[in-house]
Image 1 (cartoon, rainbow, N blue to C red):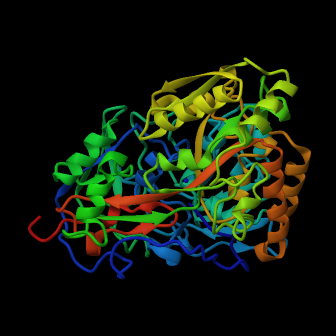
Image 2: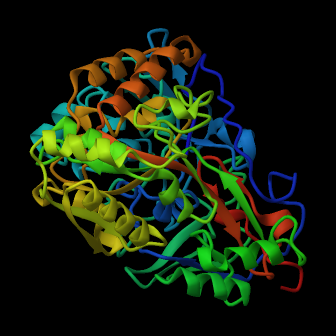
Image 3: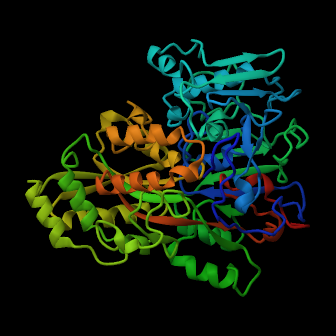
Length: 560
């Protein structure tokens, strides 16, 4: 998913991300309002429910439908990493010990269905995240009483650490411990307010109302979903969160990325969420890139992301560290990166470049498994497999069916076989991928993963390594890492409000995760904006470092 440091005395972190579009970061420099556009995604979002969605396919639309109490500026570049008040009148007042957050709900807010917004809706919103075993659960477990709420299984039970007053709009949140990223947790899509009577169930087929530029009006999983301009929303309600320019946005699920790319080239689709197909990348750059011979419609932007394969430490053969080391030594990182048509930088760091704690900035060849840009040491990897007695061990390699992922997964499978394992790929639909590998009953051994930061703080990445993130379903700790050192260090470092003071310690912990071979990181990704010639690319494409492409700011050219 993308993000930033905490509130109060913690300053905004500059992450050096760039974006496409004009220098007018509000996207208001031109273009017509109204009309409709069609967007293509290669796979169904994991969920269309703010309590559950945790993929880019879901988060880009979530960001323009559901607004939390705290949010981010809807601007590109570093400015888009700044926290601003969302549905709250001001940023939280944080106590000296960092455990108490006080906010007041803006007056006169209404959901897209006309229901008045109440302060108590915040508690219900967090209850849904916790009760539904959301991947976002770990961000809110430090609220007083949240852990007990999860364990008792009573959806209607109170969370003692959340006190609300519907008359005054006041909301007070008490934490058990200081957590430096809790301000960012309040700004995540998980915390986008929904009405207090929203059911405790997955609402993907009938997404709940929200407060935002758009509202969902149709959802047919694996086929399409539609967002229409929210007639009850105006920027006066939440300054800094713009109104929608386009009236109707229809997102179609088009698994074939080559088809998507050609249809954007031919102006039959207005925007594709995936990067263009590698086979057509050269044409896209030559015609529509920054130096292209036609009007610009395409640009790439860096992300705080890491692509890796998880290794389930609970099941054979990856419960053996020697096997995990062998895999890290034996994969061809530069070969995997080439499958992304120049959009991937090979690496073996858990944390991505520009993230505090990243440790390959000065010498990438210092990776303990060998230079990521060099061929792998297959003989060394084979010896470790033999020493572990794992020759011929059966391995199922899991993957979704989006974009180039099946090709990457097949290449990884071939690499596992080359070092002595007996691996086969298992490709499943993206709409059920994370639910499947995140269910402990599946006992998924290894498979494809990527993680796009929800905010530029190492805590965000390390939630996927904390033992507290392990859940029976919707598990986000796919390697099932339960390491006392990681848990202890994350707790200690996570309580430090001044990130620069502990950056060196985050670097040491990053190195530790790599050296323990809990995962197989192989690179860091750029993403893209590619639109039809109907879209005003210069004035109406804004890439937030948090939400990526901002659908609310798309607009058609005059007469488009």
